[in-house]
Length: 278
Image (tube, helix red, strand yellow):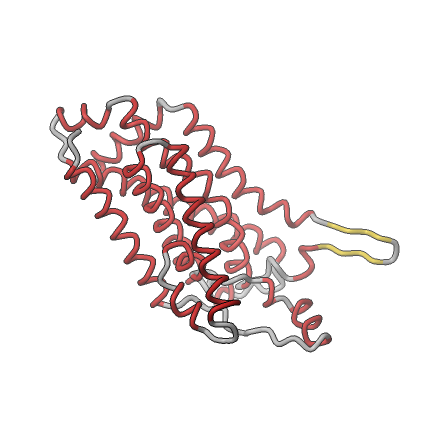
């Protein structure tokens, strides 16, 4: 595994664009801390976002993993360009000539994807822990380290998303077209879900039951939006007569669905390489 990872990082080391995107990605993850500085002072109304409890333990694990997941597109660009460069620079063919099997080649990409997801998860853990220790009203150890399943869901979400990007990179061979294909897939899923939800099966759970197995929707489902857990939001909802769901947990079956897609994407990448004449 370490031999395969060293090969991939040697390639990334010589890619200036990849290094810029990786640095930008982790800088954006760090920028979550800037949320604490958001303040609104309008006459007698003073609003400080950090005082609304978003950095309280254990809520912070939910909030930060949800927000951090939006930045994953920067690493997606690294992954698809990493695969596209293999074709344009003919390093894929050279690696195979040098004795690397197609299985090892795909594994080297998967290990890189998994390492990106793991480092991202630890980074979000560290940033969240520091913010929580500074701003949280609760500092008991049992509270600090509860709800850690959101970090597991975050890791699985990134792993599945990056594996999808890797598969598209292998399939299409061009980074811009691979990213475009991901965007088209997202639009297609969104339109399909809304047609089922609001037209064909309005007022039922049919759309959710079907699209929970769609790739991007299943990844989205891993971490529900955290805003409805805030007391201010719940109070406002109660005043206008809206009922907010209290279900925000991470479910094993949702993790299993995403891991299933991850396996299919990685195996699909290997299958494509296996049948192609490189």
